[in-house]
Structures are given as structure tokens and as C-alpha cells.
Image (tube, rainbow, N blue to C red; front, side, top):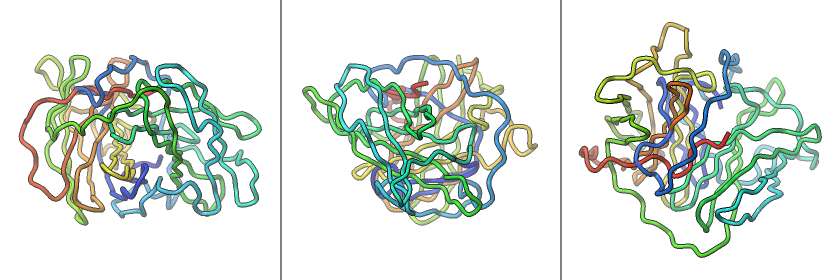
Length: 319
């Protein structure tokens, strides 16, 4: 995941661009009814050097990603297309090149060779995972999906090579057991999680760059000491309701480069590919834990009022 703004598509045509900010995180009121397990951040250290032309920096709107299982000569081979809801399973997959060979060399971006996102098609359940790769190129990670239904798996990576470009490949995942889709949470500018409150100002506009500002506070006081997570103070993923088009956004500045400061205000620049409802998932780290705040926004419409605060994402990071 490159730094700056890099919106790849989650499971549908969500080619929007979000860029610039410090950090936001795990669930403010429920993006999903069930609370995600708390977790510490085991990813530390300075941010890796950005590859030239990686696409996450700047504010150019990249093509929508995550809508295809194959792109640019690479294919996402999902070995685990079905799991049982409510039970932990080992999610396994391989990225293959045009000759069908497993890819074993990647560029590291934000401390990782590959970032994996799993989201339910009703956009209620969301997880940002960091799988491990075996020597033969097989990736694996534990996953525990709380509800039955359809999910989309997104692999965000850049193969090794001088002219390699960042890709987001998507594949469908099914979780079995009785299932009933939930309605999209209402639009809101406030989210709460674990005693933190995140306020959102602004909304993405179709075909036009706009600023999204987020302010993190706790116990009524601004949080001014956010910690770097995966080499940045904040990460933003956006999914378009309906087709789950995927966008991944990173801050324009990196920790310590003099262009950003650790909160409480976080600023992203976003360009929505179309009007409609979007679900925003903001990751931030404080006191050693990563949290995810979730918002529903509507591109092309007036910003929502304060509304009823949303909850934390039903499923956040699964480290």
C-alpha cells in the first residue's frame, strides 16, 4: 500500500482517490454489531521507501481495483473459497503470474509485501489482515467471520521489478450458516470506539477532489500523540455500496518528514468515481492499539449532519 493517496477497488468499481492524513482507525460505533477483538500493533519501524510511480502518492485518480480476479498478467488464486461463519479458519491463497507460477518476490509497502482486506457485501463486516507467505508463494492467515453471507477478498500488492505497478485483485469468499443481510448504517459524521471519538468533516465528491478532515479525541480532549501504524499515522479504506469498489488511502506525509503531525486532525484528499453511498474505514493507533472508525458517507450529496454516532467496525484488524 503506497503512501499518500491510493485508492484501489475493493469488490466493485470504487476507483476513488483518498490522500493526505495522519491516521484513523478501528471502529467507532458499529460498522458491525459485534465488537472486533482488541489487538496490539506488531508492525513497527520506519516506513519503507516509496517506489517511484507506485500510485499511492499524489492525488491522481487510479483505475478502479479489486473488481477483477486477474489483471496485468497476475491472478489471485483463492485456495479457501468457503469458510464456516463463527469458526476460525485458515484462509489460504496464491498470487500467480501469467505462466501460472506462484509469485514469491514483492515490493514492501508500508512494512508489508501484501495487504489483505476482507469485507462483507453488506459492508457491515470489515477486516484488514496481514497474511504470511511461505517459501513456495502460498499466503495464509487466520480468519473468523462472524456472520454467514458473501464476502469479497482483496489482495493489495506490488510485484518485485523495476516497472512493476501496484495491483488490487479481488475474489469472492462465502461464509456458510443462516444469513440475513443488514441495511447500510445511516450517514453520520461521528464515530466512537473504545472511548475514542472521531469526527468527520467533509464528504467525497464524484469526479472532483475534496478534503476529508477527521479529528480524534478521548474523554472530550483532542488526541495529539497518535502513533505510526504501518509507516503512517493513518490509513483509509473506502468501499462503494452495491459493488464494493475499493479505495485505499494513505497520508501524503510520513511520520517525521516535517509535513505531518500526530493528530488530532487528520486530512485526506478524496475523489469519488461516482455519486452514491460509500463506507469509510479509518485506522489509527494510540496507546499501542490499532482501532478502526467507520462512517457512511454519500458522494454528491450535502454532508450529513452530526447524526447518531456509528459504532466500531464489526471486524477490524486481524493480526
